[in-house]
Every structure is written in C-alpha cells, then in structure tokens.
Length: 78
Image (tube, rainbow, N blue to C red):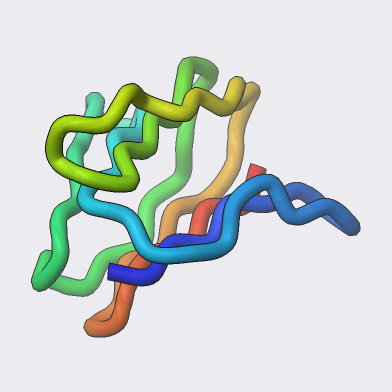
C-alpha cells in the first residue's frame, strides 16, 4: 500500500509500506493493504511504519494529527 506521512510543508515518508500503526483517538490501530476506508484523529504517541513485513520500524512522533485510509493507501498528517 502507498503511505504518506507528513507535516505542514514537510514530507517525512512517501512510498510503499507493509503496515502502519498509529495512536488513534480510540486506541492504537494497524493498517495493512486492503484495509477498509476510515478517517480518525490521532492522539500523542508514535506512528510506526514497516516497509516490509520483517523490516525494522521507522518511527515518527505524533502530538496529534489525522489518519486517512483509502482504497489505495494511507495518509498521516502530523
């Protein structure tokens, strides 16, 4: 799935990934390819991204933000 992680005026990640885990407002959630569409706010925590199933996680600090999942991927705005 294609994943974009960014802040205003700054791209932190833009590419294909295996999974994305984020601190959703109702609890932590993990998104894989084919996930149903959703939009949720994020609370303070860590966004973790795995490029492949067995790769080490790339981590991004989140104070708040928004996660949008669509049929072709996910966007995280921090």
